[in-house]
Length: 140
Image (tube, rainbow, N blue to C red; front, side):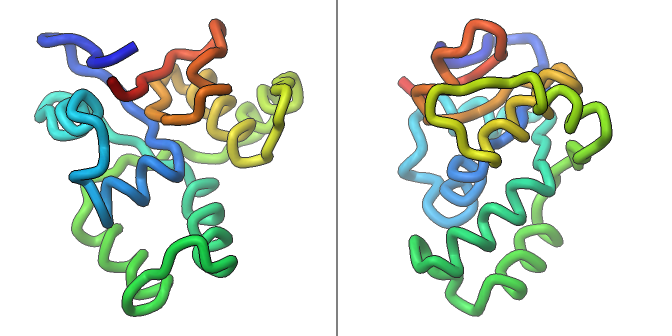
């Protein structure tokens, strides 16, 4: 999909991988995603599901927080301007109806969150980018 437009502010929900990458290696994000994340009018949302998922990924050794996950998270949350996209009953209800070919709970909950709160999901996940019922933003 590329950039989300030159003028209109957009509400963006970061998926877990995009969020981690934006925090530790932003230069590895696509130019269009970096531009949209840095655009002053855009609102950046984060789900508690991503915090749980990031902790799980870190525990499994797929990436390492330099000073431990809890300290990394505290620093990120203190410095960042993320708005909370809460995990609500309505999100759970929406998630119950989502079927993905290669389903993972994090993907389902983030997709449901995006739909319930009318957010654009920023992701590199091809499966999610291919969902016609989900507003997404991917890289170039």
